[in-house]
Length: 238
Image (cartoon, rainbow, N blue to C red; front, side, top):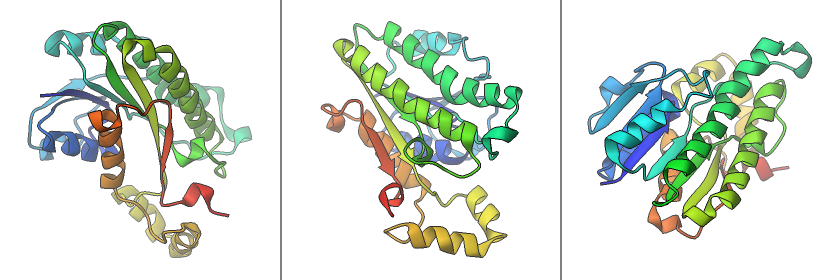
C-alpha cells in the first residue's frame, strides 16, 4: 500500500485527487486548513489540519512520515487565486499568494527530500496554465504559478540523485462547481473560452487527478522535471 500526501486535498480538485488514489488502495493524508468535503469521501483518509500560510513550518510532513515510514508521493496541490491587475495588488495580498502557492511548496519539497534521501519518492506540484501563459488581471497568481515551475525543475535536478522525481501539472479550464457558478453569470465568456480550446470543452477534476496519479505512479519512472499541461490544448492555441 502506498502512502500519499495531498495538500489542499479537502475541496475542489483536491478531493478528486484523494478519490483517485483511494481507488488504487492507497492511504491518503490530506493537509488542509479545513475538512471541507472529506466527510463525503470513503476510504483510508487521514486529515491533518494545517495552516500552510505559515510556510516555514513543515512539522506536518515530519509527523506524517513518522506515522507511515515512507511517503511514496507528495502532491503539492494547495493554492489560492487572486484576480487583480499588478498595480492593484497590495503587499499583504502578494505575500499571502506567495506564501501558499510558492513558499509552502518550496519548504515542503525540501523537507521531503531530506526525509527520503535513502528511499526515493515522487512529487507532483500543481501549477496552472497561468504558469505557461499570461492571464489577464491575475498578476500575482501568474507570477506564483510560474515560480512553481522553477521549483519543479530545481527539485528534479537536485533530488534526482536520491531517486526522487519531481514534475508539475498545469490545469487549464476545469468544470467545477465554482467555475460553473462564475460562468453562469456570463455565458458569453464561457462560449468564448470554449471557442479557443482546440478540443472545444472544459476539463473535469478527474482529468487532473488522472494526470497526477500517472506522474506519481511507477509508470512514470523515467519522467522527471516536466510541466504537463492538462488543458485540452488551450495553452498552445492561437
